[in-house]
Image (cartoon, rainbow, N blue to C red):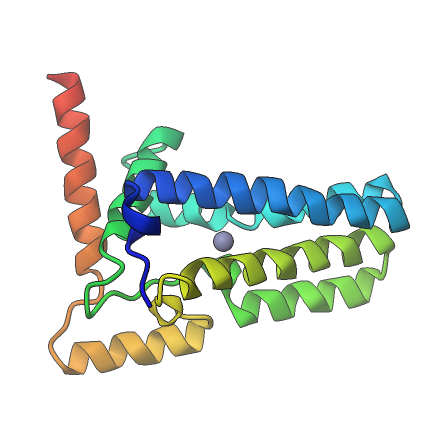
Length: 186
Ligand SMILES: [Zn+2]
């Protein structure tokens, strides 16, 4: 069953709740467990990685808006706009730190450095993906995010062949963002 935007809550609240409840709070509980058994450095590394991995949303926001916007508030507004289109049939997104390729690179780095803090950070990153997966799965939308660069390219290519513009949703979000910015300056 789909839960549209978390049981009727406004999409911006759904995103806030997801970040605050899952990536800050639940993540902190898991990190406390890490800290208890492996020391505070491991706990801190676990928690930080679990939060910082979402930084790709900021990169995505700056990239998609062609660096016209930089503010945190604008970023949140932009991603809320994207999230509102989650249930549209041709919706597809990808976040670079949320891909198997990136995680493979991170795992390789952890093997090379082989330090407890780095392993803890890697675990934090994986834990983040588990939380994200449940966040999307609860809304019947886990297929809306491509989990790999390759998967993304293939799906975008397939959509293009069917005459579907995969960037449409981003364009709509940018238009809404520009409208908001204009409204504020007027
Ligand atoms: Zn995430």
